[in-house]
Structure formats: C-alpha cells, structure tokens
Length: 256
Ligand SMILES: Cc1cc2nc3c(=O)[nH]c(=O)nc-3n(C[C@H](O)[C@H](O)[C@H](O)COP(=O)(O)O)c2cc1C
Image (cartoon, rainbow, N blue to C red; front, top):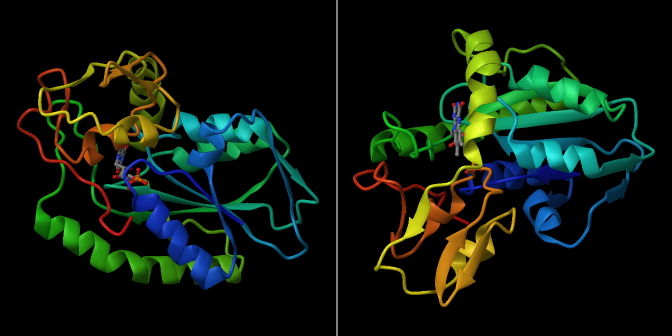
C-alpha cells in the first residue's frame, strides 16, 4: 500500500511511480482527511510493502502526516515495517527521525526513509520562490531514476541512508526552525483577489477542509497546514498571501 499526501502534486506523482514499480495500490491521505472518518483501519497482506509518501515541510513532517498516523491502525503489519519517501525542493533535515519517533508512538517501525528532489512550491515567506523552468524540468527529469534506486533499496530491504538528503545544519533547521513553522502556519494571510471567478477549486483541494466559500468568495479559517494547493493551483492566479506572493511564481505538477 502506498499512502500519499500531496499539496501541489509532486508526491502524488512519486506515489504513482512507486505504485507501478512496486505493484502496490495507492491510498490518498488527502481523501481520508477530507472524509468524515476519524480513524483509518487497514489490513496488511503478508509481504505487502507499506510506503508513506509526503512532502517535507520546513525540514520536518507535515501536520497532515502526523494526523494520519494518529488515526491509523494497521492490522497484521509484517516485520518489514514501513518505508517512507519524502519529496523536497532541496533537503529534508531530520524529517526521517521525526517520522521514526511519530510511528513509534503507534508501535510501528520505520524501516527506511528516502528523499526525492522535486520542484519547490514554497512561496509564502520572503526569500523563497518557485524554481526557474530550467531547474523545474531538470528536477523532474532526474526524479524517476531516483525512484528506481529507491525501489531497488526497498526490494533489497536496505536500511542505510544513502538515498536520504539531509542537508547542512539539519539539527538547527529541524529542531529550531520547524517548531516555529508549525506555530506560525495556522495564522493564515490568504485572500482571494478580484480575479477570483468563484470556481471553488481551492475549497475542493484543501485537505483540511479549511476553506469555505461565502457568497462565492473563499475564506480561510485557522486550520491551514500550508500545503499551498490553493494558491499554487488557482486557475485564475487569484489567491495571494499578504503582500508576499504578488510577484512570485506558482507551481504544481502538471500531470495531475
Ligand atoms: C510549507 C512548505 C514547507 C517546505 N519546506 C521545505 C523544506 O524544508 N525543504 C525542502 O527541500 N523543501 C521544502 N518545501 C518544498 C516541498 O517539500 C516540495 O516542493 C514538495 O515536493 C512538494 O510536494 P507536493 O507537491 O506533493 O505538495 C516546502 C514546501 C511547503 C509547501
């Protein structure tokens, strides 16, 4: 089973590649979170591989992954434990250790965690923007070969971290910056401009059901996890975040 969470489509594409190559079915964490369910129970078949695929947020675990694990029950989970593939624009810090600890709370074992570099979608703080078209295409062009290496590592049950990109000053990023990111995300500064054509896609995409449409106009409440699906995927480019995003690019994976 390939469980995936995605904001802008990168992790969904990586999950699709893993699903094809490992011959495991995909389960959308976005759909589970949007549903009425508050607990998720799955039967694991003998020899079935369980892989979690998700984006790195501020060198740590996205809140939706933590919520998913809190609500998850795996019946008959086998000795292989769980594998993880984190997508990131650059590097993942100590996300692997955070995930290991989070899974241990549910008596689940992280077998190995790997990373795949994909185009950046983080645009809501000064100094961060989407990649140039050239960098974007280059990352996508290299991603499938990386997935092949990861599939090989999973099938061989290798537990080293050679396919994990931790980056420099990982401790500082994950232990000092990540906690403030988590606190700050809920205070959303999103709004729709006059370009909004009231299509409602933002509300449909929001994995946390955090966007409601009032008189045709989207309104954000305080449960935002900053997946940035709304702002990056708006077909009218009608969503902004304070004054920060006015001159920035937008990105989402185009095959989704
Ligand atoms: C809130 C947020 C924080 C991010 N933090 C990081 C980071 O710490 N390191 C990194 O390399 N990329 C970071 N990124 C980029 C994403 O991890 C990357 O673009 C990912 O592939 C997006 O996956 P998705 O399209 O499945 O949502 C961040 C993106 C968002 C939205």
